[in-house]
Length: 280
Ligand SMILES: NC(=O)c1ccc[n+]([C@@H]2O[C@H](COP(=O)([O-])OP(=O)(O)OC[C@H]3O[C@@H](n4cnc5c(N)ncnc54)[C@H](OP(=O)(O)O)[C@@H]3O)[C@@H](O)[C@H]2O)c1
Image (cartoon, rainbow, N blue to C red):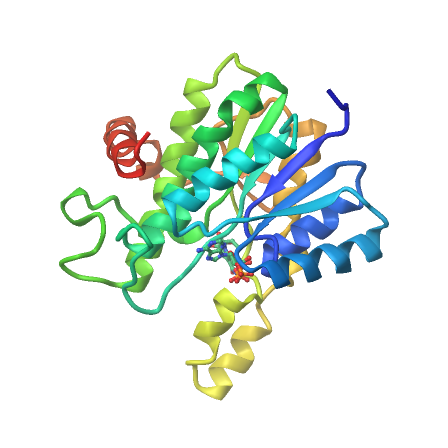
C-alpha cells in the first residue's frame, strides 16, 4: 500500500471545493475530487495540476442527487485507490425553489445531508483501515436557524428555501456528532465546519436578487473562496486537530453549534430514517 495520503473532496469543480482541491494539491497528497460534469472535471484537474505541479490529482464523476451515482462513485473510488485518509464532504446546494433528487427526495436533504451520510458510511471501512483518518463535513452557520421537522422532513407540505437548507445543515452536524461517538477509539475523526460567508455562486444567486445598493454593501462583507477553504484544509491537515472529533469549527476554532445539534434522541431518530432513505 502506497504511503501517499489520499484525500477525497466532493464538489471540487467550483467555489470552496475547488479552492480546497487547489490548496491540498500543494501538499504531497493525492487529491481526488468529485465532479458532476466531465468537462469541468478535466479542466479543473488540468488547471490545478499545471499550477501546483502535483501529478496525483484525479476526479470521479458523481451526481450527489442520485443514490445510484453515489454508490457507483464509492465503488469506483475503492477500485482505483487503495486507501482513504481524508474525506471532505463539501458539495452543497441552496435551491431557490423546491426540487427533488433523482430518487424523489427534496434536494437540500438529498445533496447536503443524505449524500454525505451515504458516501461516508460506504467509505468508512476504508477510512478505518487507514486510521488515523479524518472526515470533514462542510455545514453552515445557518444550521442554527433550522430544526429537524420529522412531520415534514422533505418540505412537501410547505417549502421555505432557508428552512430547508438550515435543516439539512443541522442534520449534517447531528450526523457528525453521532458518527464521532460511534467511531470513538477507531482512529477516525469526524468534524463539521462553517466556512464563512463566501463569494461563490451559492451566495451570488441571492446577491443578484438584492437591490444594487444592498448588493454592493453585502458583497464587501464576503470572503473569497480561497479564504472559505481554510478551515476545511486545516481540519484535513493540521496535527493540532488530528484527534479532535465531534466538534463544529468556525475560522479554524471549535465553536458552539446550536443546542439542537447535540440532541441525542433527534440524532438517533434521524439516523434510522436516513439509513432507510438511502437503503443502508
Ligand atoms: N458560500 C457560502 O457562503 C457558504 C456558507 C456556508 C456554507 N457553505 C457550504 O459550502 C459548501 C460549498 O459551497 P460553495 O459556496 O462553494 O457553493 P458552489 O460554488 O455553488 O459549489 C457547490 C459545489 O457543489 C457541487 N454540487 C452541487 N450539486 C451537486 C450534485 N447534485 N452532485 C454533485 N455535486 C454537486 C457543485 O458542482 P458544480 O461545480 O458542477 O456546480 C460545486 O462544486 C456547500 O456545502 C455550502 O452549503 C457555503
